[in-house]
Image (cartoon, rainbow, N blue to C red; front, side):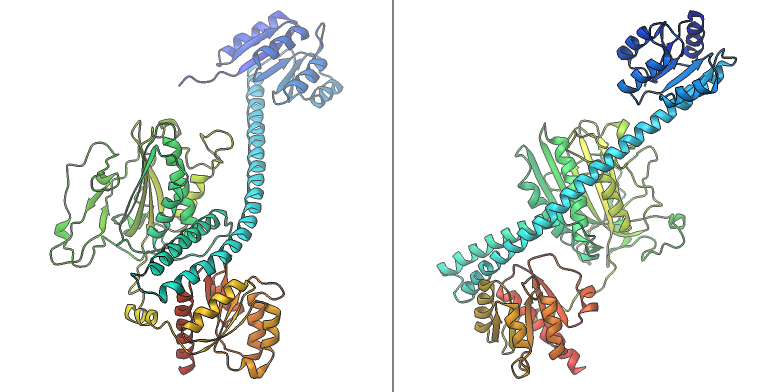
Length: 610
């Protein structure tokens, strides 16, 4: 690569001085332009746009002070060094006040002094330019953040209204299905209505995820559900010239993460993949599988970083002999078996074949194959040994050029046009993944494509729940308890009331939080209520305020809080309002509400008996 030679403009009416400066600076790689007077200097300045100017003060036609003013008006970012025989204090102050970055007294006894002054001023100029660009980037990000904040607020309100509209649609469709036989036309049509309602609710949830600005909740998560949501969103937004393929292993264990942050990471990777193929078309592949990271250098990790795993973790009942020493991996790093719908980079893993006497195995082994010359791969001291969920996003685009591979995770670095990218996506994605004790890396091949791999630790958990108890709970959809229902949407209140009464509950309902508050204050009426279902966002009283009012008269009564808005973490909410036992996000069916009521009452009964 040809090294850039800074352009220097020397404006001096003495030819000998100009020649001496030019010969000296050219030996150090500078490109020097000359001007014999102020008028000629202004002309050359406008033509060549130098990186720095050496300027004499006393010259014919235009003196140095006049030129300084003109230079500053035209291009204030170009530094000017005054080199003059006039060395009195007032001339120095005037020159610096007019915008000069330095002042050198002639005759110049040591040309190295001039060279160092030029280098210093060029460095200061470069830092100023970078600072100005950084300031512009910050201002642009601030404007974008303000827009996103406004969009998030607007989206939340719209989502709340849409979820309230969808609630009775889903609820009544479910009630029609419960009151008819599966083969009936009413059942089939109601089922179609319900499916369409769920698709609409899913779309609302996707929009909410994109607009959320909080950190969300870190909790056990099945990645395949987030991946499917991303795929559904992509299918509605990318051109038909790009084919989306997915390969999701259902046996992949859960990770501990925030679904919104994972959604953000995957959307960023998929958007980049789409842009890489936008003009030529291609295949975008998203895969999920569980892998084993083997690392013999755990001692290289910080001593205060604990790991649940050590050595090579093998699935139960899979003997070590099933590890295949496969020496026939493809030469190309981008290998996709489309017939098996399997993702790329198979050469980076050794597959563990299922044994005849053991369960199906969904794991691979992440080999210690770090190549320091590859900018995208993971040094083996970044990850501890153990089970990881591996998500790969692969495109068949043109690949990432070698000269920018080291920069793609840098904040504000982008190759996209103005308005199409902020340069923060990959940087934020890597920070999110590393915060989860995972890693993100990439492989890219010219004219073949790029594969980004995200590794997140699998939770080391036992049995997730009592399946038999859960099945019994789901079959117990009816009851005879007294339920208090409050929601400001009349259609939702009516739907809850009808559906729960059909299941045997005794329901007292209100479409006004004020009326409900008055009812709560009557001891003889509220004493018979077994459970309350409150909407959170209502005029006069919110659901939480109404619950607090209820607890003052009936301590310990369980409350289910519902909302069309994204809600806070239940555990955090229970610290301030302990009686709230469940959060339900609209829309949902009456059947789901009935199951949740039985679950909450069951737990409350166990606590009372205990």
